[in-house]
Length: 407
Ligand SMILES: *Cc1c(COP(=O)(O)O)cnc(C)c1O
Image 1 (cartoon, helix red, strand yellow):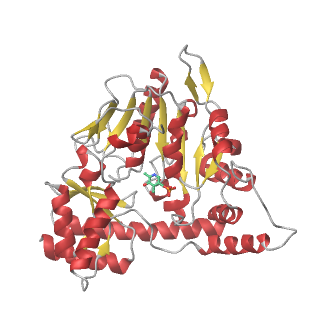
Image 2 (cartoon, protein in one colour; image 1 turned 90 degrees about the horizontal axis):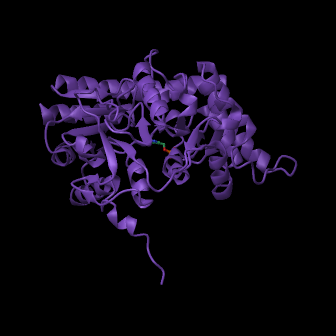
Image 3 (spheres, protein in one colour; image 1 turned 60 degrees about the horizontal axis):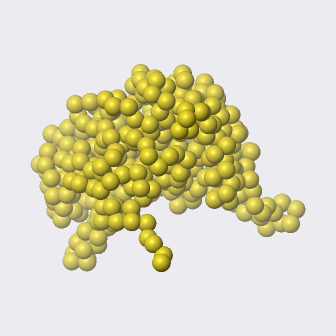
């Protein structure tokens, strides 16, 4: 008898974004003449930087000629891309990361989802609340939790991110083994200072814990005092794995390229307490289960680090940050408290009440789609997330409508 993985039945029935899509579709069917503006899901809207397109075209032409055609590439990524990442994202910021510690992949979603395969079944896992749902659901699927009750799974240690702590959770008051952190944060847009990250690294070192650091939004950091990578913190090389993606940095959400950094010095422990390096384990998983990102896409990603690519991606992000500034100014005028939007594309707005109700109000009265905070965890109740990913025209129109509906 084929048995099913019953852990799947513990998952919350509706994935946040499918519920939003359903409500928007229903509204749009009933009101076909209304123009809905989507500031909900975190997807980019602007085309790829010209430097990436140029590299992509060139690589496609190489694939068309016998002399330059390429078949399977190295599963971990081509050396040209791994070296460009190590140099530009890490070494140039004083972080000691080597090219062979970088694993190129087709997405940070998959990487943050798959990494938990390297760890034991029984672990104490610290999960921020609110949170990017992938970290939670993949551990539920793997059987590391009990049932869900009132929005929280038994077995996780939840770390509240609230207005009181500036949306940077305090260190857990009990020992934990695995810690998920994401800065700049999705959904809150909050950032962590060097001192705050240093306290997490210290905690991980003292407790033989591991930090999974999701830096998908690092390119939005404009405050020069903020760290872009956890490896800018002394000692992090031994206790942290970092995830990055070209999705938000350079508009690759539909193009697909990301990477995970597993330093050779990062370890997990056997039952007996012996340290086991994770680099060979992730290498084994990656080579067994993944066959590499396509050559043209890796060339397009490499172009992000060219002089033209750097200038173009910076301009692209400045554009979204300009949208974020408009959104922040509008909501501030309307008297709302918020975080994010300054070093992040997300604005996390305190709406003071039922976030799905507020979502429905904005959808039905302003035809503006946001994301209800409650979908990201219990601490998200009372907040909505507004995304700056859209055209300037749409953001301006959406803000005009919010001014009308919320005044
Ligand atoms: C968008 C996003 C990613 C990137 O996902 P990809 O699969 O690389 O597109 C990773 N983490 C968070 C928190 C995100 O919001």
